Amino acid sequence: MKIFQVLLSVLCLASFLGTPACQKKAEDRPGTGSRRLSVVTSLFPVYDFARQVAGDKANVVLLLPPGTEPHSFDPRPADIIMLNHGDLFFYTNIYMEPWVQKILAGISNSHLLAVDTSSGIQLVGRSAAPGPDEEDHAAGMTPSPDRQGVPEKIRQQRHEHDGMDPHIWLDPEYAIKMVENIRDGFIHKDPENRVFYSDNAAAYIKQLAALDDRYKTSLAGCRKRIFVNGGHFTFGYLARRYGLEYVSAYGLSPNSEPTPGAIAKVTRTLRANGLKHVFFEELITPRVAETISRESGAELLMLHGGHNISKDEFRQGVTFLSLMEANLVNLMIGLQCR
Image 1 (cartoon, helix red, strand yellow):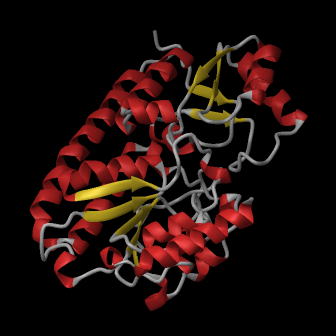
Image 2: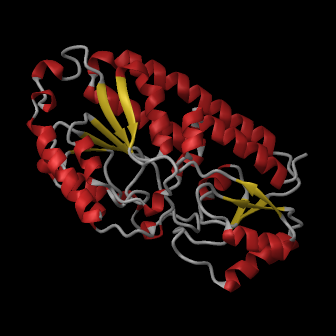
Image 3: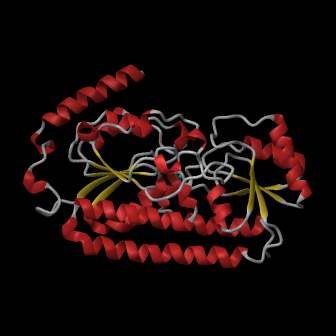
């Protein structure tokens, strides 16, 4: 079935490229007419940030299908087709999306601008200590591979994030930097609308700054300063931002299974700190969190990592800000702030 689907996609691509409607004309390029930018994004936070900045100047598409767990995602032939006709591709970072190498290596669109939204952000390892090669992660804006080639750093990626924590969007300060990188990508591609993109980005950055202030104020007086997650190591940047301790059952990769010893350690942490809740993540069966809950008596609470949203959430118009507001409510419960 997979072979059939690939062959079908290739045939569709050949047919698609052969139609006059698919061939880009100079007058259709952004800045030379009324055509809206075609923008592809990787994960949900990048998708939502790009929508806020783009307004009505672009069609923004989420590459990752709603409901799909991002760590198990592999690009499809249809994704390459989409990018071969796109103007901009925004992705989180090479540690979160090692499949970017497949995307960039498989396209022939010299018009596409790929933007690493983590440019200018220091990624750290699980220990929250700077990694040995943080200064070496991919540049912020890279031309398509037919002009520059896929960076060696991307080609060497492994699925386990290479020990680096890629979940930068959960720190509002870093989310703001991501929005700025997205803004710059739009301006680079469509300089005639510089003021429009700048104003939209500034307005959204104010909302992110206000969110940051609410987190600081709401979590400042909590009785507990530690929380436990039965999933993988997602919330390191969030914990670091607000001076919290954070323990997870998994490592950075959700594909690794926690050992019985790790589960026992997490259970002991809950009991030793008088915690009444253990968190679980979206789109992952909370089997380990449920085991910890049974062993410790702690109740389960959702803490949304924001990687992706469900199909229902997508239809309901859930936003990054609404996810983070819901996270704050549950964190306040888990940290016994009331």
